[in-house]
Length: 442
Image 1 (cartoon, one colour):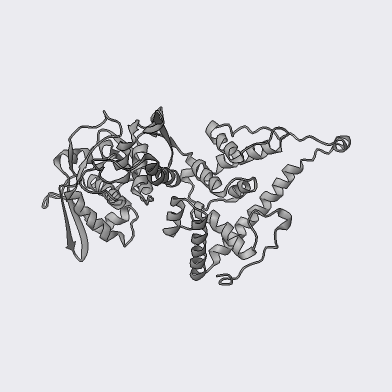
Image 2 (image 1 turned 180 degrees about the vertical axis):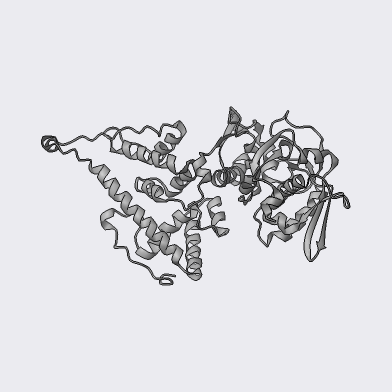
């Protein structure tokens, strides 16, 4: 039987009380949280406990595969299973009046690991006060198991689950909470009696990477709102919106031509790729066309092209781009030849960029494993030196080099290594493209 048949549908309802878990006596890890969710789904599929043991049961490897865990996950999961019984958690809802209050208890009341026909099995039981809520929640957030499996940090996973509760809320805003409330919820660690952490460090090390990860791997777009009392940030609230369907349902190879066009217009590659992933190919290409049209107009110079591009998405005014107006010379008016040199140059660049992207991608994909490994090592060193984001470095560490964030950087890095010039070199300075044999560079 397939894993999806054992666990159930990809979309499911998670109780709101299980979203903002506050650990009291031990840490909650990302693997533990993922496994706990998969175990909840399996318990729902089974419906009732087994008559002989009075517990729910499943193969341990099936649980691990349920959140796309690796073979090395087993040891970590076993350690966390013990903590699910011994560590106390305070259950909260991200909205104060939404959940039934039952105080604090362990995640599980009992857990057993045993061998059955040579395979490791797990049996577990819930505390009585949690059992009904886990199996049949009255208030819930609808989330996706396939999305949960992609997270690599507890903070990102916890923020995603909480924000999913508000994606259909008319205000698109989470409940406003003091940042001290968010500290244990996102870090998964108990709060000390005296909080010595400053908000700026919590923001830098936890909040920003979590928001970045949610925006990268999930179907949501999240932005943090800082609410100050005087000069200090006291409260946090998150704005939550759904990504356009096109950006969450497209599973084929991502067309990076639009990202290259943005780079040619002076947009930072990381910014371009982030906007591409957040808003989808259709909206991104419309925004780039709008920026190109604005640059072709006679008028005041745009002070920040990146800020202008981002504003197009925020104001949702990218559907009706203005026609490009070109001031023709007297000679052009006399002979009646309306030539838009800017537009023609853009078309030439787009064609050459598309061809370059396709060529370089095919060369990379044709490399043998040794060459790919050497190339990725070089890219890692390069990205570390340029201060790449934590989410991007984690994708590279996980070996997901074909993801959009990595592939865009990989194409530019390979181009520089194999051709000796920057990707954004002027068109008339580009060298002739030559095929690079496997192993010739690395």
